[in-house]
Length: 431
Image (cartoon, rainbow, N blue to C red; front, side, top):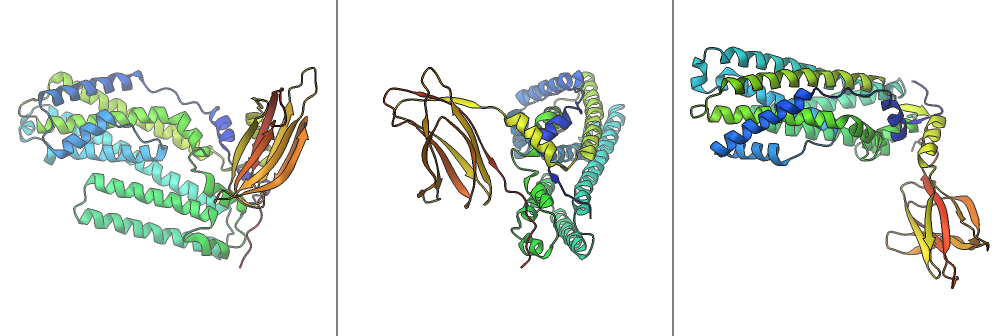
């Protein structure tokens, strides 16, 4: 079992500094150019021959009016779905009957299908390796005895059940789209299980109590890693845009094939359209595989834990910014903090910008219950400046209040900084 002494989970600040060293080389300009040409070809087909089926209407709306998902992994699943749908359309049994008599096109389509198959294999391999990397890293910090074995067995059982669920859907005639909707649901289930493991809820509540010796830092990591503004949001901010462009491109390629096959008798593919399609698949597969190779290296080298000193210095540099507010005479100024955990620390540092006459301001702290009942935690007192902290006894809302109601004429310019610091981790207690 690897030691987590002195370590804390990665923070968004740290990942930002790590990603600064891993810039992604921009996508080829051909991505934008060819995406635009495919888009124009789609619009021409739609204007000449409006959609006639629900599948066409749904796909057209998805291409024209929807944006790619925000999450990196969901985009990966979407690319995988769109690639497989495109391969399905490129299969000879799904070609228009008249196309089979074409001299050159079948060869071109066969080559495009082969390239997309290769890219699909690269993507599937990346997803498997990334999943194993995360799980194995987590297991590194678990006790290497029956407790770790218990979690492995639980995971294997869960994965077998998920695979059986997929097979049942396919055997019942589910579409590629249905299968990937279920695959993404299963992926979100895995994410929820990680969060449950970290917070000791759901199916893991009894298990975590049983696993005495699981490091709290590990539980914090699996609970926080996928938060909306957690560490992975920095990854989405840095590397999302090029992936979004690739997702939109393969979706447009798929739409073009779907529309072309349905209208082939009236609108046979021209040489220019075939050339654009060929270039588009070639550039997409090359750029997407380059992105997968890059992001897999970034993931493989990205740390899960860092020292508390590093995290602290990064957060200090990020948060060491004071706010300044004017509190008019006869008024108060309030800051509301939401505290998730007992034994968190509410910290403050404030002072008044002084003029020719020294000023002071009232300060107090109160707790607000879910029903709205207020409890005074720190009594009212007047200060010129103060720096302090308060250890919370309850989770919930805390209000810091600066009071200038006693002043008739003088406004107060308040310079302040407040923060809520999570509790120092403690080992789990067994029942």
